[in-house]
Image 1 (cartoon, rainbow, N blue to C red):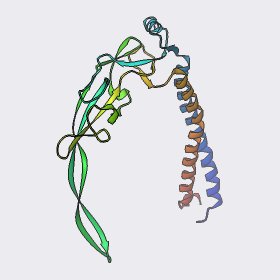
Image 2 (image 1 turned 60 degrees about the vertical axis):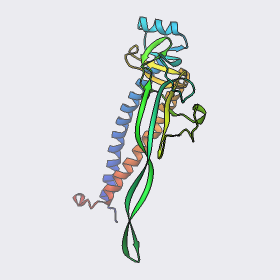
Image 3 (image 1 turned 120 degrees about the vertical axis):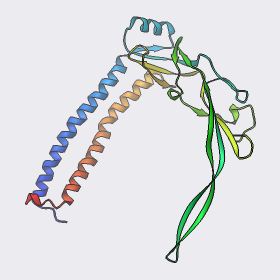
Image 4 (image 1 turned 90 degrees about the vertical axis):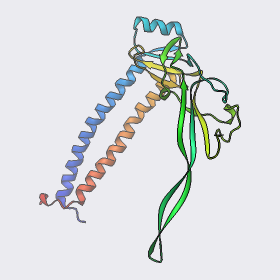
Length: 246
């Protein structure tokens, strides 16, 4: 493939235009990230202080980044598990036979056979959990998706199990998913608990450090991706016939 002088010149113009677009897009995205992070930096930091948390909410003093403990208002348990939880989900599975068609080539000729295999398939679940959780003496609506969900292990169970799985008759078993109670972390809110974001096992200081690191990495990641895109555009252009340049 021969690249003409006109293609080289147009490629240089194309690189210039794409870089200009890249700088504009970079500045727009970076400013958006910086503005969001600025809200975190300016937020009122509260460390395990229910009185200050309540006062800040009541007076609407500003954005809040508070550290405390997430605790179930009405914790749940089960005769088969140890301790109390914010959320429990017993997941049933059934060992099911499946078939699939497998085609292989032998001496240039296709041969088809039916193959049998077994898998543990979902067979229903039973969920139970608190409706609200307590954070610095405020009751907030509980959503399991906002919290780390873990699989209970043998040590978490009162009954015999294998790797956390409990036999339930022939070709059936179940295990438990749970959100553990009394987990520490931080809460961020800009609208006084109408909406909020939870950060588990993190202090406000750790959250801010993570924001700063992400902001610093943004430049590198953006220009790596942008350079790749620009290179691909130029490569596609040069591979074309581009007779219109003649």
